[in-house]
Amino acid sequence: MPNITALATTTEEIVLNQYRTNHTISPSHCLTMQTIEAARLEPGQVRVRNDFIQITAVMADLMTEHPGLPMPPYALGTPLWGGAVGTVTESAADLPVGSVVTHMSGWREETVAAAETFWPVPIEVLPGAEYVLNQGVTAYHGIVDIAQVREGDVVFVSGAAGGVGSLAGQIAKALGAKTVIGSAGSDDKVAYLVDELGFDAAVNYRTESIASRLQELAPEGIDVFFDTVGGDQFEAAVQAAAPGARFALCGALAGQIDGGDAGSPRLDIMTAIVKQIEIRPFSTFHTPHQIQAWNQHYGLWLSEGKIVFPHTIVNGGLEAAPAVLDGLLLGKFRGNVIVRLDRE
Ligand SMILES: NC(=O)c1ccc[n+]([C@@H]2O[C@H](COP(=O)([O-])OP(=O)(O)OC[C@H]3O[C@@H](n4cnc5c(N)ncnc54)[C@H](OP(=O)(O)O)[C@@H]3O)[C@@H](O)[C@H]2O)c1
Image 1 (cartoon, protein in one colour):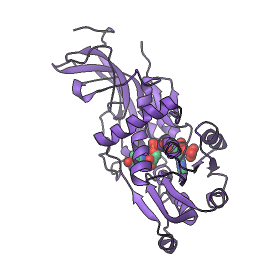
Image 2 (image 1 turned 30 degrees about the horizontal axis):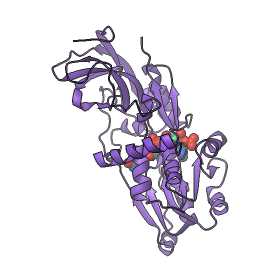
Image 3 (image 1 turned 180 degrees about the vertical axis):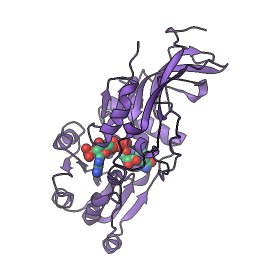
Image 4 (image 1 turned 180 degrees about the horizontal axis):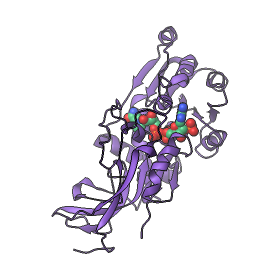
């Protein structure tokens, strides 16, 4: 059996040591790094050493006992899971050593599993293997299938500098939206949206009134609202909606991060009725069709320069990951957040 590195007898992983019982507790407080014996390969399995792992906001929700999400919470005493990119270092299957693959066993140095649970990364068409760690399937599904953005639309994206939002706004623009407006929590992020991601305008929700800025930026109203935040940004969007506006509800970061009812807006029902706003909440289940639809456009749009992959790579190895999740919730990073694992 060929090896590309001397195989270690132990390996490290990050496990949930206690549930996150309220939003004031940093995720890192609930996580421990532990050393375990490296698994031996069974026939049909491969060993994959992780190079990059993805960190997303929903991981903090999955650390609570009852997250109220369409997927199960993390289990106590077991490693967290999440998107990862790695390299096959040992193989007892058809997948050769050296293959670069993506999979869902993040938060650990290495994983051993059946070869068919890993997907090859198309490194020949991507600028870097880490480019597969994006939240484009959700952004594309929300913008294309749910909000049904069309040419000439005025689109407002909340949480626009985050992993999903930063792609959603660019996808809307690539589809011919006339104006794409984003909201974010700092002036730096506002500048980033306009200068680097091609948004037409952006609003700092911490220092400006979303309602009055939307009135100014979209005097005829917004046709589409792609919402990752909820709360008062949703309320402002209802007031700013054009007749027949489509609202694609993706997430409620204000509540997920601040807790309580911060993410739960009051719906001005009369305004919604008069404007006939269509409120369309959605969950993306990453069906083969959804994945394929996004991947086709992602490769094409990247090569045409129509979109960029907004991301932050943090060095520091697996041990850095818990603090990176803390920082993500505090708004420290832009775009999709990825930790690079150390390799000896
Ligand atoms: N429906 C689906 O199928 C689906 C799938 C995937 C994800 N989601 C949801 O999509 C949303 C975005 O996910 P993501 O991974 O891309 O997260 P994200 O946007 O990267 O989340 C982190 C960002 O949240 C923002 N934030 C922090 N506190 C906030 C507050 N009080 N109000 C508003 N924004 C705040 C910060 O940006 P600022 O600095 O700009 O505040 C921070 O950078 C989440 O709600 C997630 O659960 C839904």
